[in-house]
Amino acid sequence: MYDVVVVGGNLAGTSSAISASLRGLKVALIEKNKQPFMPAHCGEAIHTDILEYFNLNNLDYTKNPINEVIINVGSKQYDIKLKKPLQMIIDRNFIENEFLKRAEEKGVKLILGNGMKDFNKPNEIILADNTRIKGKIIIDSTGIACQVGKRIGLANILRPQDVGVGIQSRVQGNFKIDAMKLWFHKPYGPMGYAWVFPLNKNLANIGIGIMGGQKIDMKELLDRYIKYELKSDYKILSTFRACVPVAAPLKKIYKDNVMITGDAARLTNSLTAGGIRYALLSGSFSGIVASKYINEEIDNLGLYQMKLEKVIKSLTKVYNKKRKMEIEKNLIKGYSRLFSTFYTLNKIAPNICINYLLKTIKKDWRILDSLS
Image (cartoon, rainbow, N blue to C red; front, top):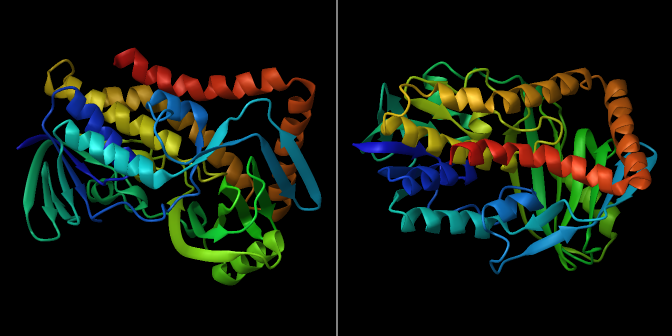
């Protein structure tokens, strides 16, 4: 029997496995795919401080710092120039492979290309090939599917409006290298937004993410948006579709010997669908809590819930705003107010604005530092 079995080899899952194995636990990581998606099923924008915290800054891979954000909301455009980059567009495939490599180096048993078929309480995972694996602790990192969480009654079925439906193309063309573009609502991101995230001056991720339940031809809409941005001089290299939760976080993210992380716990910003930050935070923290439980420093997994409660409450507030903005007139008004405020503050006091944003992000990592 393993100390910890992690189901799902995404960033939440691999960070869980690394965190637990670093603390001497016997860990197995189950992933249904043989390797990470190529290209990554993600816009690949990440906060700069995350790369620093996980020692990813000095490695040789694509890291494109963003110094300008161009935002369209209806007829208004906000061109926000940042004093220092808060976001980078990165090669997520590299990071996922790097995390898998780190996990294996720390002794994690990698079970790739053989996903979970079923779960027998309290601790047995049945794989697609009917292999059975047991763990004293089970960590669910299965993304929006929340495979273990649903089986133990922690996750319900999502409303269509609480699912973000996305499509993205990797596009070759000519891009402003340090500027990301966002188009909120119509005509290109109805009840959502469209984006251009440049990896370099000749390559970008261009995509659309909208609220579920709408009858829209996503491919046709994306093609129109790409044509609007690049006119005619471009080449589409690949396209994928994906879904992410844009729901309130689960009220309870652990039960008995199970912890739920990342998208499975619905730890995403429901207005932006951004979740990398919360995947890495919850994944890393679940490994710490698992270690404390196995080593009998704590007698249940409630510490996981307690330390992430502020994050859950914060994301729930964002979700409540999103619910109000499901009415179209509120959506435009809400986004306009948000970006006009940020635009004005950034012009008047750029240092204060940047430092405030960095401070709110770094609060998350203090949770890990306080227990490491």
